[in-house]
Image (tube, rainbow, N blue to C red; front, side):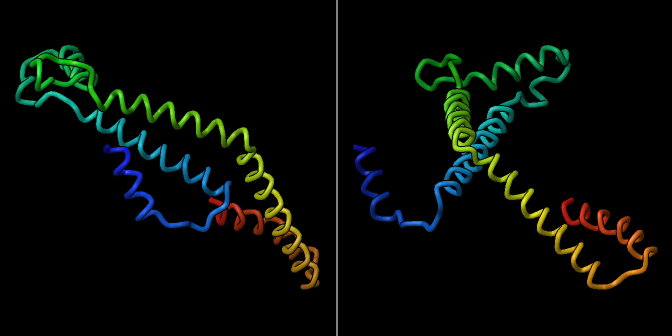
Amino acid sequence: MTEQRASEVLRRFGAPVDTTPTEALLDAVKWTAGYVAWLRDKVASTQADKTEMDGVAPERVALVNEERALTQMSNVTGKREASVWVDLLGQWHDRLVRICSEAIKAGIEERRVRVAEQQGALVADVIRKILGDLELTPEQVEAAGNVVPIRLRELAG
C-alpha cells in the first residue's frame, strides 16, 4: 500500500527535467555519494556521552563507541541489535558502487578528460594567436612564456 501511494505521489509531483543521460548519471553519482557521506556521519555520531564515560580507559570508550555505531537498542526486545543506519549505509554504498561502475562503463570520465584537453588546446591556440598579433619583441615573447602558464594555473587552481 505504501509503495503504491508513493508511486501515485511521484506521478503527481514529478516533473520532466531537461537533462542528458550523461548529466543524469553524474547527478546520480553525486547525490548517492552525498547520501553515503550523510549516513557515515550518522553512524559515526552515535557515541557515548562524555559524562557517561568519565574515568573509563580510552580504549574502552573507543570500543563502546564502535558498538553503539554498529548497533541500536531495540524498543521491542530491550537488547542491542544491528543498527538500521549501518544497514542503510551498506545498501547506499553498494548502490553508489553500482552507479559509479555504470558511469565508468559509459566512459564519462574519459570523455570529461578529452573535453578538458580539447578546451586547453583551444585556449593555448588563442593565446598563441593573440601574442602573435601583438608583434612582441623577443624579450616580451620570453616574458609571456613565463607569465602565461602561471596565470593559466591560477585559473585552473
